[in-house]
Amino acid sequence: MDPLRIVPDRFSLGAAGLIAFGLIFGAAAYIAPAHGLDWADVRAGGATAGTPYIFDHAHHPLGPFVYPPAVAWLFVPAARISTELGFTLNVIIMLCACVTAAIIAAGVYRLPITTALLAVIAWVPATQAGFMGQFTPVALVLTLLAIRGLIYGNELLAGAAIGLLLYKPPDALPFLLLLLVRRRWSALAVASVAACCWYLASVAATSGSWLWPREYLLMLHNYYPAEFARTAIKTVSIPGLLVHLGASPLAASLASLGVYLCAVPRMAKARMLEAASFVPLVGLAAGVHAYVYETVLIIPALLLLLVRGTEPWRTRLVVASYLIAPLWILATWIRFDPLAIVTLSLAALWIVGRMPLISQDAFEVSRPIKGSAPSL
Image (cartoon, rainbow, N blue to C red; front, side):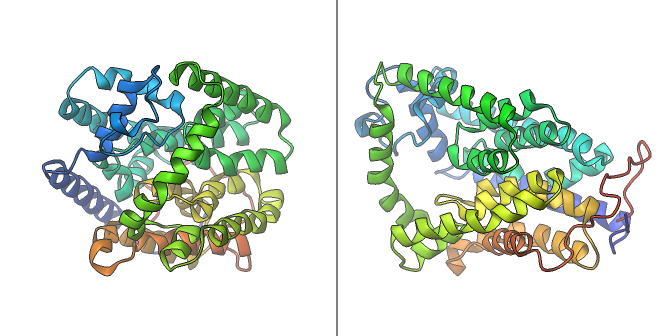
């Protein structure tokens, strides 16, 4: 592996600066008056789990519970404590999830643990997700477990991780497509069992409604137009940007389908580590509801670029991505989320595959000397 064109000290200093920025800005958001709005929605979902009111707007004054009903069971404990305490605990748990993701990533990409920690926690959307009342670092943990299962042939681990990712179906969809394209039938079967469990748990969460998918989709259909009009500047996906620019929802949906279809040849031909690392990024680019906190799922692609990217693109893409990431805070003023540049550029470069983005020679990453810093 050729070294990145920046020295280790500058890598560590830059990563520390980005980590400090993420935590300081997150702390500032923590004391803002509206800091707990998204968490309040999640908490309300926990309060209505197991009742007929989980889709009732009267019981969700700040917005409906937009996850599949079964997910509300996970937040029943949060509904039994104050919103403020639950929000604080979520922040702590999400930061711990980032650390967990880094530990898993160190094994998957064979990085020194310190490098993996810096790479994950320096990605500003990862550290700030909890401060936004979100829990996308959990999706990152599951994504990395799925990647680990796929590259080591552990069908049970891969299928279970992808099945658990169905707590937010758009995050699991690109992996399900990958399993189908690569004919990983055992993992697909495990994920299907998990999907059935989510369905049955959702029946219980809606107080016995076997037709809850119809109610759920109707709720999303009625909610998202108004919600998107308020948050469109946070979108990082092609469908989101198209709707933001005035395209119809149908055109945006067709664009999403087009992205997936264009990615299928790369999914079929790329090495499994490469394909599994980039499909979450493809899912973001194709997502109809992909915002800044979802961009934690870019991390696997960045880590693969870090260990197997070819120069000069590795240095350019990795450094530029990390420097652009904090600029999402400017979206309100520039009416555009700069993270969309990172998401769409990396996805397009990988799907098109016209330049040597990832080195294919001696693809297995060499194990670093324990405790050594990367030659960055």
